[in-house]
View 1 (cartoon, rainbow over the protein chains, first blue to last red):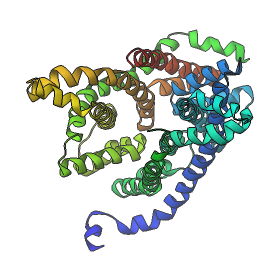
View 2: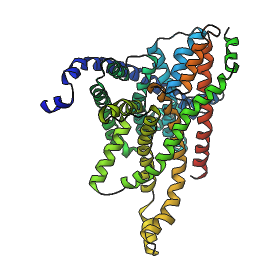
View 3: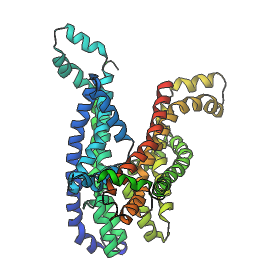
View 4: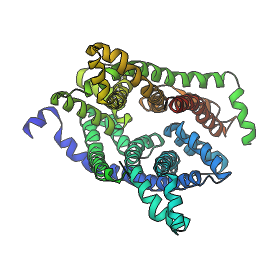
Length: 226
Length: 224
């Protein structure tokens, strides 16, 4: 502590730590809902692509291209500043969650799609010839294998989306970035504010990153015939 | 009303200004990619070393870059370096530094992946045929890794272009900021300008990144 106090204003850090905890709550809330909806949207899109449903399939492709080739910050600016002009007024939180879902949905869709494509067609045919209904075959045979293949990509997307939430400070949501920027602006305690920012993201993301690595290792047995 | 406000794009040089703003971010990403590719190749080769210290260093570097949001890295460099070392970097210099730092790590990991995907027997066969280490690398390994790497490196470029949109948050005047200026300057004449300006910015990014993504996908399919 003595050593630390030479370099850093420990009192300052203790005083503002609760602000970071509160801001981390904002980051987590937005990330949680954004990721949840991304998974749902991604799963639906991947299903549409897998079954090649006409019209919907083309719409999904357009959505995926739009979402993957534009930055989240620009999407958020459009949602937050642009849409109110046509009467769609959403709070910053809603915009952030919608934006994150718009971005994340396509990434999750790609992850699910690569999983579904990795299961050979013959498995579906074999299952049907054994008397499974197409739905049963999907649920009991194809999906579990596809999910195991998708898991690493899904985990990578979760980490990516949590990181992307740092952008929401751009539409004035009081997340971790916003608090750090505020403290730098008001008190000029740049070192302390930035250090706490880095620590906060490490605390949030390091466990998830380690968990993802473990999960990936554990699921490696799932590759059929490898 | 909204139909009329689209004309703000064609008023004066507004559209050209937006394009100029876009160029600011695209230029940063091109410079950063240009620096990241050679540095990333070196870093990727460094990562394949068996030396535990080399492994440790590259592990920490890669994990740190992977875990920290790019915006945090920008803040660390733009606000932190000034404070810690008294380096007064401009926001553009900080952005190039951060995106090169990030790009080198990502590129290095791609290079490492491509290098270790070359089966062991390729090295052994080359050695058996009397190639020196240098020759093996130059004639056998590099051409094969290049094909695996190029589509991924192109994809990194689109990610870079998308991520450089963040520089507006460290005060650079790029396409979003220019858009904001146009909207603010015309607040009374064009009250609904925001819809059109941000919509156009969205599409501008799309039309820059989309063709690049398509090229990467085509190359990947052809060289599989």
